[in-house]
Image (cartoon, rainbow, N blue to C red; front, side):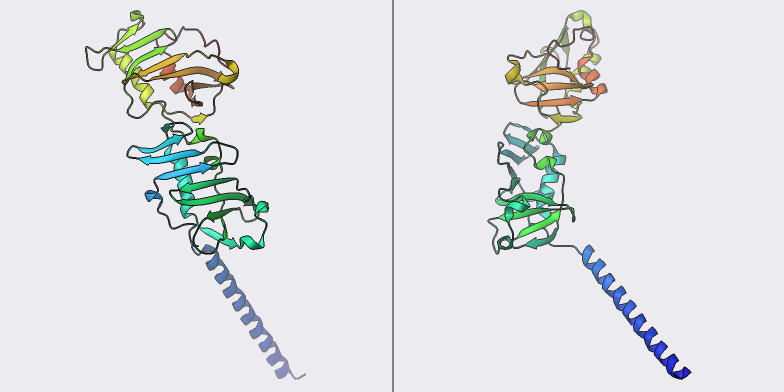
Length: 308
């Protein structure tokens, strides 16, 4: 083969190789662009416009949340203020980007955790079934129920499961008292503090020798409004099994409502368990001192029924 012919062949091979590399690079760029392209959201709902959420689980009571002027409130299974952070996690599902879809007629829905679904969540009138995860794509199967148009099972990026489970306690606000609560009386181990009705924001303590400083009493009472729990959890003591469990602390509010708490020490942590609703508040050590270490209460006995 002549040298000129060989050079021509090599030139053609080089040109073909360059073209192939350019096409491959272009295809890769298109693939990357498609991967980062924003996908359609699961719904067109505006999370700020949603006013009611219902979580349903096959073996648990429905959890119902409603938006009020003061924020989100839990209406069932108990009536308590809700925590905005896990509520935001719930609402985020409405606008989560989809990562593909499946035809329900072509697959077995039970294999995707959708027959029955692990849970369903209802945003006002929009119902979404929550299924199992797709581990390779870090996604989760969800399905719009009763949606207009052809039914499709959607894949969305996986999300924290805790707000969607059947334990309502992690949706409860971390405040110990209602936002508008007015304390009139605090009964703690070894100490009773009452609002002095004859003077504004004045308090009396029994025994009176426990403290003679109004500023300290006001500060201690204020702590019950300010403290936020580290976590809200199911009861530490099974009151049904334990029988009649006495309260260690009773907080009386302005309308005569009484909130009863049991002090529970467990696994190196301190909890306040509400006796009228099934919930416990885990306290940080510093907040436990603010609430419970009063001049007259510091020498009081440890609660006899505390779980250890």
